[in-house]
Image (cartoon, rainbow, N blue to C red; front, side, top):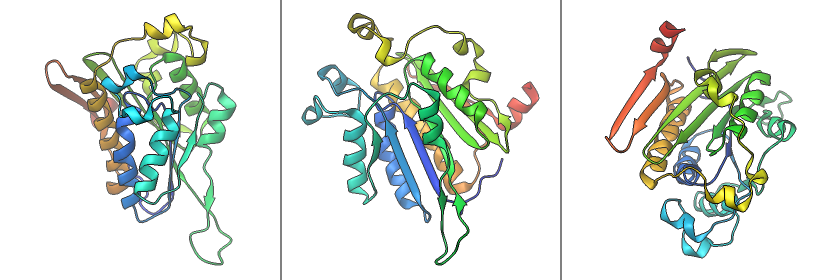
Length: 253
């Protein structure tokens, strides 16, 4: 599928932790290099804790600070971009739909015609209830690119779903792995301290691998106008990556 190379871009990222924190610096650099307007909004209600320093992209100076704010202000300032962030968890459909609604840009001086943004939703969350929310937003969107990453300690997957003109062109994570839509886990704000402490273990290597795959997909979409990879599965234990391409998924469907 082809994507336009001359329209404004808005990236909305849910999650600024293990994977999201490693996505941020590379995505800011990518958006900075584009010759078109670009926005990057990071959303997360969590604060940096000492335990996060082992595998997340934070430093001791960040302890106690909101993760989304730290990443947005640090890297936006480096590249001279506006720092946009939501320092809370996005847990309702209305808020998410508002975030991913494309704004219009006047690209020509004295022009009354506005060009809508290309919107990319990045899911870097660690719970399936948030993925269910993203799935609902995807299905209600006219045009949306939704890239979701998920991983455990050694393995994970990244899936790119696409909506175009109110039609699902490529299935999102909820269509590829429908069991995630039946999961009855909780939003981050619904977890007790004990439940939060028992979250699925992850590793720095798995987070970095997932983040790299996300950045690769976004890079191909924004700089080449095409991404033929619909899904990437990986294992850091065996140093293996396996991709499902556009043609392969069409045959499977």
